[in-house]
Image (cartoon, rainbow, N blue to C red; front, side, top):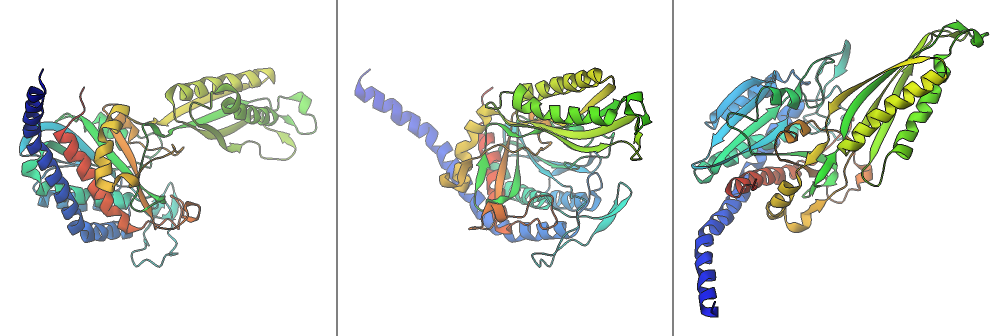
Length: 440
């Protein structure tokens, strides 16, 4: 092929792609302008939500506020999803794939300290598991809701240029449901939130009090850990504390079990692959100093960033407990409740959307991060379809992360100036995925 012919082909391709490239750049500019414009509303929504927090599966007023806003935008709105969730559909002006954006709605049973002298500090109290508690958005879910409400308004303004459909998912009970209940993302999936229309990919983010404002942190594969609860019941034979040889001591047996459980991660797992944690959080048995009790119960948590490692911990936990109990002449029962899977970012989707994130935040502000051993039920969506979950900076510039108040504490704090980037990032991910979906 001659050089002249090759140049003609390149020029022709440029002419074909230029309109699409120009439109993408125009939409990015519009998203930035709209995010600037809507920022005061997003901040106000967040403050209203922060001052009126509701626990998981009781987000009634929160849901009403969300639904009212989405209906005013002309979206197709469904309420009562997974008890109190809200789902809305925005159909673009052009055909294309379906993308979902998710925000969690629930607060925590935490009494807020007015450490930061905020005029919108929560004073809400309620009853939780039989106790009077304060209620606080101590994990930033109020910001998540406000940002997604903002994204819905931004994308509604761009409706005629959208190549496909956006499904907005406002999810209740991310922090968990009552014992024995299914809730949160798992129940949403069971009720078909990823169907009608069928979602091709889903995006979400979590504001972080220890990540600097203006920053987006990402990681392919395991981003957040699985969370499993376990319960161990060790049964012995009751005896007088002065004649322990007359019985089988479940307290001593339990002590050996707890010590041995700590060797599962350190001696049974390839810790160069991924981190894992096994923690015994409580132990209970006996009522008097001079009685060897008949049984001891202990409860704890398992965290893993790799599914095979998670399964290995389950296997070794049962083997270790039963082996030690048998050796001591006792018996043991082990139950493991899988609470949340690994939040696993689809590798191809993460790579595919990285340039979009860099355009939204600036290349220097999109950073690869380490995984964390807290859990997030966004993982249930990712089990069904490709998903990408991100961390958004909410720490004031110049603050050291070690001094930032932790999530789930009474002093939790975020810098609201970081929320505008969250709006831009989610809107950009949606628009760019619809225009250039991941090839299957």
